[in-house]
Length: 608
Image 1 (cartoon, one colour):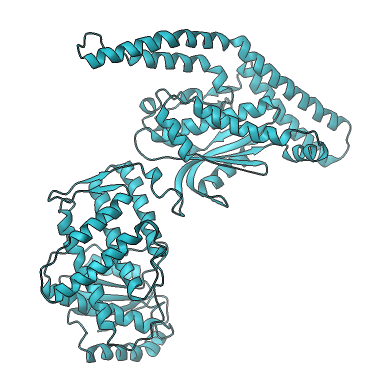
Image 2 (cartoon, rainbow, N blue to C red; image 1 turned 180 degrees about the vertical axis):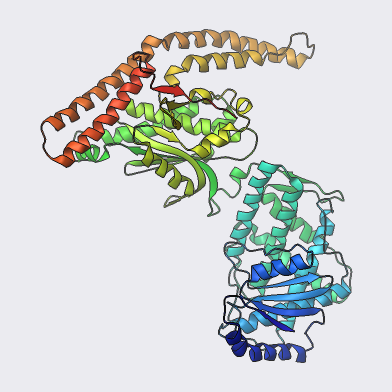
C-alpha cells in the first residue's frame, strides 16, 4: 500500500528509516477499524506537485494543489472513480519530523470520515455556475461534516498534537487576498461564472481551515469583519452533522444566510432563490481598503528633487529660509489644484479616496490603483500625470527641478512603510532618465495603447507625452502641458456642455427642462471660457516660461563660475554634469516657446 516516489532524496536511506514507522502507524489505524478500503495507495514523494500532476494526467483527470502564500501543501488525497490515492510530501512528512504522526493519521481519518458521510449523505460533489446557492451549500456541507467526524474519530488516538492551528487570521487574510484578486480578474475578463466558482471555493477552504482552528482550540477574535459569521457557521455545521448522523432532516438556511453575508462584505450579492444570480456591488479598489495587508496593482510615480543636498544646507544655515515650507506647500497645492480641475466629479472622488503619496528625504512617491475595465487605466494615468505635471511645473517656477519615472506594479503602503514592485521599477527608470524629466515606462505605454482612440477621449493624453527626436524610445511628460494646451482643454469643456443638450423636438417634459438648464448654464459659462482663453494667450504663457528661463540661466552661470574657479577634478565633473542638465532645460523651454529652430522634441504618437 505504501509507495515511494523519490527523485532528490536518497530513496534507500529514506525507506530504511521510514518503512517500519509508517507501517506501525497504518496498523494503529487498522486496529481502530478506521482504515478506508477505498485507499488505493499511499505515496511518499519529494515532488508532490509533479507526482500528483503525473498521476492525474495518466488518469485523464485534472487536479491542482490549492496553496496560498501562507501555507504549503504537504498532504493531499486524489479521488478518481472511487479509488483514492494519498500523497505525502516526504521532505516534511517523515520519521524525523515531530508532527508526522499527527498529519498522517488525520489525513487517513478524513478519508474514512468521508466514506462514512458518502454512505449516509449521497450527494453529487460537482456543481455548475448556475447550480442554486442552496444546492451548492449542500454539496460543500459533506466536506465540512467530514471535518467534524474526523475530529471525533481522532479522539480515539493518543496523538501528540504538536501541529496546531492557533489562529484563524492567516486564513482570513488569505481569503481576503484571493477574493480581491478574483474581483480584479473579473474586471478584466468579465467572466462571472469563473469568478463565482473561484469565490465559492475560497469560502469552502476558509470554513474547512476555520474548523481546524476551532478543533485545535485556536482564536477567532482577530478574524475582523467575518468573526460573527464564521462562529455561527461553525456551530451550525457541528449541529447539522449530529443531525446527519441520526439521519434527520437538515435545514441549511442559517449557513446560507451567513455565507451570503460574508459575500456581501466582499461586494458580492448572491441570490438565495432557486435561480442562481451573482452581482458585483462595488469597485474592488474599495474592497478591504485599510483592512488588508497586501499589494495591489497601481500606477506609481517616483520623483527625485535634484540638488537636494544644497537645499538642505541652505535651509540649515539660514534661519530665515522658507525652503521647507515651499517644498511642502508645492506638493499639497499641486495635488489640490489638479483634483479641483478634473472634469468628472466621480474621478475627483476616486482620486481623493485612492491617491497615495509619501515624501521622504529628496524623494516623492505618488500612486493610484487601476482596474482592467473600460478606460479606467487611461483615467488613472491622466489623473496621476496631471498631479505630477502640476508638481513639476510648480517646482520649476520656484527654482527647484525634478527627475522621475512612472511605471506599473505591485504596491502597498501604510503610515510606516511602502512595499512596492512598481516603485522599484519607477525608481530604476528615474535613474536612467539623466535629464530633469519624468520618464514613462514601456509597460505604461503598452497599457495606454489598448483601444487608445476611444479610451483617451477628453483626456488629451496625446498632448501629454514627448520624445527626443533622436531617441524615440525615451518618452517623458510635458511639464508645460497645462500651459501649452490650456485652450484645447477649455474648448473641450465648452463643447462637452453643448453636446449634452438633447434634440428640442423631444416632447418629454423632463428633457425640455434639462435642456433649458443646460442652455442657461452654457450661456453663463461661455463668456467665462472665452475670458479664460484670453487670459491664457501665448504672451501670458511665454511670460511664465521666461521667468523659468531666468532661473535656469542663473543656475548655468552659477555652475560655470564654479568650473572657472575650481581645479578639483571631481568638482569640475560634477559642475559639468549639472550644467548639461540645465542646458537641456533651457533648450526644452525655448523649444516649447517656439524660440529655437532646433527640432529637438516630438509629441509621442500612439499606434495601437
